[in-house]
Image 1 (cartoon, rainbow, N blue to C red):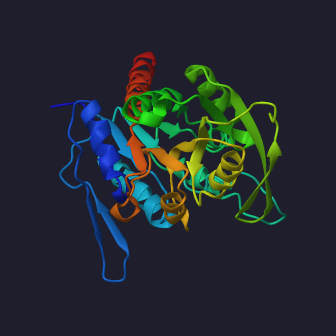
Image 2: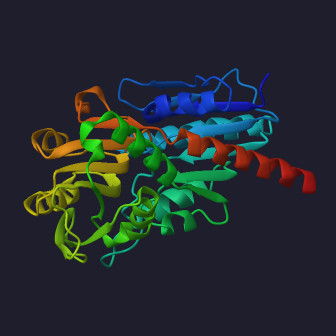
Length: 328
């Protein structure tokens, strides 16, 4: 019997399956049912968690309330089993995509900082470690203090994905430019440009009002994009407006085509339609942190995995728990 148990909420069963496989186990099957009014019910009946490492995988996109409740409900099951004498070796939450990630600070007086509230609530449950993947802001990790948080960087996964794409597509041989659409993504995009050996071009972005973005100008106008494949890098694609706005500027400046790579493919609003209808978007590569429903799949949308980065982070958390137990 393995000392690892992996479970997932309904939003992340595919990611959970892949993480479980990487750890050499099968994804567990919790009972998640709903009453007629939609109220969820959670159970880990029949599970023995004593002395075992529990890994709960749940991203919280789109139906953010339901997805957080799935995570809390499963943690509540663990808490109940602990009250009956079963003591796990560790409880590791893989929050690959964190809902409320843009609500990490107060922008107007009286506004709820929802990311902090979610983290504070999670700390009331039996969690020993948290894993985040490319969080929208580093402040998100600080909200979990004193819980240890491991932040997984998707850079290597992006480099792998891009090199595979370049080998498959005829336009992959074109000269390349790496585009940073927002100052908040500059560090990661600069590292991606260095890894690919391509020039970096940076743009500025503002948020004039709630849920609205506007590209305000280029900081590297001397770097030509004529005839180049422009790789737009971001932590996520929600509505896609920023990438599309920057992409339009690049195309008007002579770019051969656009390849967008993001960690989290939320694709809300008209994002999917805009991708399909924008002829100069040659492809959009998104990771498997957020499940892509069938109705949002297209030949233009490519998926890549961050599990090779997540699995070692999980194993490191397990080792930390074992060492901490030895020191007690």
